[in-house]
Length: 388
Image (cartoon, rainbow, N blue to C red; front, side):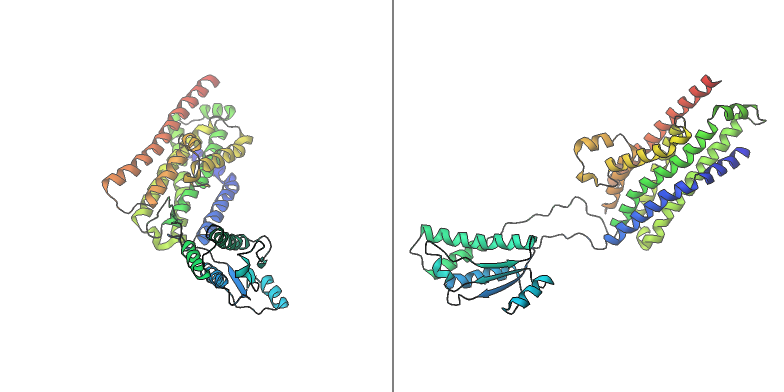
């Protein structure tokens, strides 16, 4: 088993590089899990500004309507009308916006020069812009009523404004993915697994194939008292064991991270899909091993793993990618791997139709692997004939 022993030696030599990719992957997986503790909200809730109101126009009907309107749209904070306390409250963000309504504000709206409201806010904050918009909307609506209906009473004016301001725009929250149970973090883990599986496969398998593809070593092996069948069997055995060990370690970590969430039908399908992708990754690595040079393997690994992961939905979800990018990405097994994972994550009904759909995507991954194997076989045979 000399060839198999050589395989192990070469794999150990590339182990530090492979551990780097595993470390990066685990860091990303743990970060995603910690930042995704709560599911995304299913409904829209309006943001409310911490607002303090000082109404000096006590008898003004419109002023009272303004106070009520702002109270409904904001989180009212009780604050003493003291400059030092106001500054402290703004500094510590106990209040974000302060509005002072001067005496005679309601009556001044019917004149040519309305009294301006006094406003203090946290500079450049989004809450200040939002509250400015609310106040401007209220005041502009009031001025329109007065302009086009000068005889309207303050009571009727306040009633009409409140009726207009109570009209809300319906908000629809679009959700592109609805994961069943607690599988969201598991799906993210397996999506990012594409990065690590591909990188480790290229570094391990391609590194070995490059060494044994050296023309001097190949000619020396032809002179060795070992049949080509035995040599190819040991190479195949090494590749299979390497792929199995990498798969078991990386998938096994998910059981440690997510515990009982891995003992579901969804998780079982994700594991099977990872196996299909591993086959495609190993096959691609065999093909790369017939072209790459020893000093270029790291660069090739980075280009292929990062490139396919960025365009296929690993680092950026597929729903946020353009149609042209997704069309190009569909010519890679990583795209179909991520697409299958997303389908599995949202699957609740494990009907034959749903299983056939995700099974079809997995078959495409296996098809890519078979295609890479066929091309690698012909390239290897051509190189062997030309070098001999």
